[in-house]
Length: 175
Image 1 (cartoon, one colour):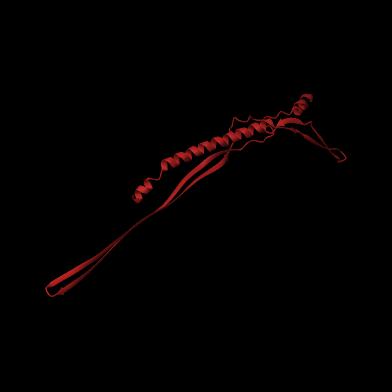
Image 2 (cartoon, rainbow, N blue to C red):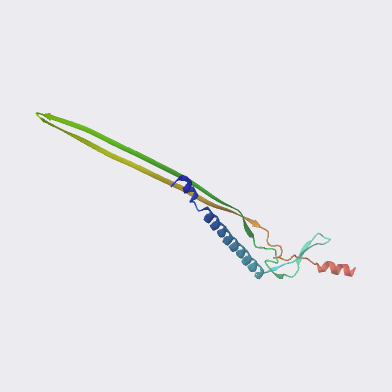
């Protein structure tokens, strides 16, 4: 098999499809986790003191008074889940292919002649040896890399908070 064929046999479409499906599955899990965190934040109630008044009297004495605590959820208190998305995905494949071919042939020929009175004889000895060596080494590495970044929560997941201070309304009405 040629080096070019080795490179063509790397399953890039399958690698890309698997990585894409893996990212989609991971993104779904991240989103569902953020939704679950939002539910927990909405269901977890705490007591919050909405206002503390600091009063400095004419003698310079400082006193503090606080409004009655109100029960609110962690979500209402301003804790929001973090949402993430994959911003980058990289597939990197490196391959080293080494092919070696070696061929060695040795031929030894020796001849002997014998002559005598009316007789002649001879022998030829042939020694042939072949040594073939084929080698192929393939080394490959691959790296899949993704980058996640936090993103703002969906705009309609959390309502806007409007503060209406009744104390100011009452003060304006009494004037």
